[in-house]
Image 1: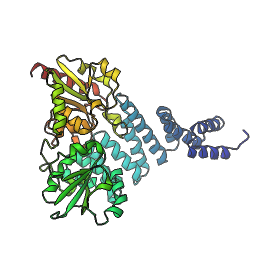
Image 2: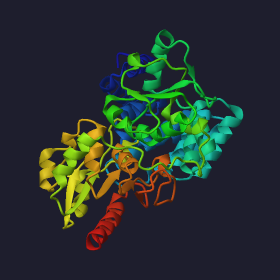
Image 3: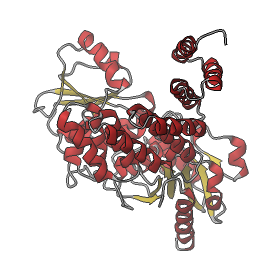
Image 4: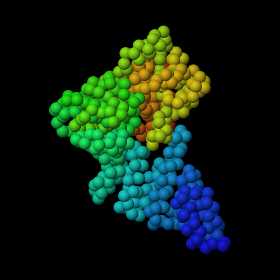
Length: 465
């Protein structure tokens, strides 16, 4: 070699910082050919493979690294990250994965070396929550907060745990610690210029005041929490909402809203603002005070008349289906299905199936005899009108499920073993949506069992209308 070991390592680190994965691989392999025991090159190579998605290779290399650097916390942190990435990859491919246990073991090893390591403890808490060990996850987050009471990620992790257990007052209060959403960030950016007198609302008396509610996060989140507008209106002079254009027309049906807007620069003057998802905290929601005003959304008469005419001569059971969520969602790997997995369901006789799935392929729908509805729905008002004509909606954890529940339609929701917090734990019903029935994976990745249960229920429904 014309270059020294130090020069090669320096070059490999430079390429790694630049994201040049190919050259990192070449240089590290060269170093290890000549210096097989060089741990810096092995670490660079393992992290390089991790970033390239070569998780099995990265894990093999990181195991070697951890065995040789048994007192190095970083080796176990990287190993935990690699196992977690492989777990998510396998789960997204609808495979049963055991790697979450390996994730937990790696972070426990890190903490055995350095018990006060905040990142290792937070990652362990997150992995325990994902495995369904909610009480154990709470202990990890609470341990962090004893020494770092303002560590927002731990507060947020604790919020998820408390909400999943139905401890709503503690959970929603902790949920306030989440990072600001893009919607709130946008509003705050223009607030001082356009609405300088406006203050954040935190539960103060609204008598004689106008308040702006801000839709944030996903469509499903807005649909779930828009119900709180009615409670806010009981004391406020005026209640306004700003939301995405896709929701605007439907949101006008909500009792308590005086006006609905889709742009921040067209808002009337207001005294307070509050995110929809902060309302449960400031209104002190508990298990006995979830607003039960079902239905609290309704399509307008024009859309309803159109869709009623469309289905007036259909006598078979009408079932709307949605099998996948937004791929940009960080939890989509575990909540979405592929349409072919629903084949046993789609083969049931006496049922007309209708797609409520965005971006579905016409050829695939035709293959399974599914009629596409969502292509005709340019906003949620149209989707709500279409859903109103269904006898049943079957969906994974998506906005479709929330919309069906908000409309008071029968909806069967197919969930991952560790589902989103709003579906709670170990329940087949939902306090948020009385018309919902929940079907959960018995173990992570086991969609076959879920589909089997749904098939049995649907066959029974067809046989006993």
